[in-house]
Image (cartoon, rainbow, N blue to C red; front, side):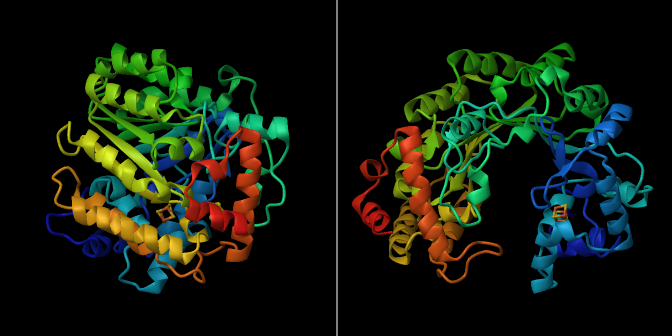
Length: 452
Ligand code: SF4
């Protein structure tokens, strides 16, 4: 954070961002998500990913981030023009000029000097990253219902063995229609020029990065993940850089133990794992998960690895509401065994595919779940183990659950199409994954499901 003490986000925006241009955003220079397996990149989660030119990468390894496309976006931002791909931010600001959009949050993590340098630099020059999320491949042992073949080989196998999901017409249809073979254009990670380019850049990048986060697939299954630990071991640590890993913590014991053993070579290791429901509900939503093993691996890592913090990323989908308070009880119990801030949750509301959104459920069910969650918060808001941010995020979910049916998000399908796809998808999911929706979920949901 580089805001001055007591400086509001809006004042920061006026001082650092507006004084440069009407559309400046530090993320275009210093942040990236790069999918090395497929050779795609984007500057943050909002703009669509674009392809990294193979020819450019063979000439210049920094082109895995500094693509001609991003350079053009930087030129536009230096001139105060608004790139269309950043519409997420412009929309928020257009509603009210005092609204604070993501570009402010994503810019304030860099120093004023670094931002001045970016703004003054010729837009065609390459920039070294400061924050990076990277995926080496999509190899994954899970095939969660809200994921797809772009991010999971197990999902790709489902489509390969059983064909596309059929009878889906809402915005989610495309997610479940192909094996996404284009995400694996190379036979192995060894012959992948994007990965080669990354490792050529790494010695220099390791000097400038504030944070690198490895995602996947499941990163513990990829040998490139372990190369970082070897690097840190050989270089006597990782300096002040945050090294973060997203892991489903569902891989074999040998990988969990390796993570624990290697963690001692990293000064600032942060672990991110995912779950949002308890027991059989979690296992239904996240195909491949054994809930007890996940919990036991989490506890083992929390107590034996050298971690700076651990975050459980909750993906709030319609089905998690039926055990979310039980899940939160269990998390709170785990949190209480460690210092405040060591184990945290983040509440990420799933919007797409919209048929899996909580807003596809009928209002009476959502209202009941909103009340349950609100009561849980009332019972636990004094807990010294819940942070203000966690309470605020859960309160936002309490409100969100009461959103009327007729106000879907931009680009979401109408409620009738979402309901139909909800039934159609989970019927096929049951058949393909040997699951049974009606046997897992409570009567109130099952009778609505059967009525569709
Ligand atoms: S302007 Fe907004 S959408 Fe564009 S890169 Fe910055 S944070 Fe992302």
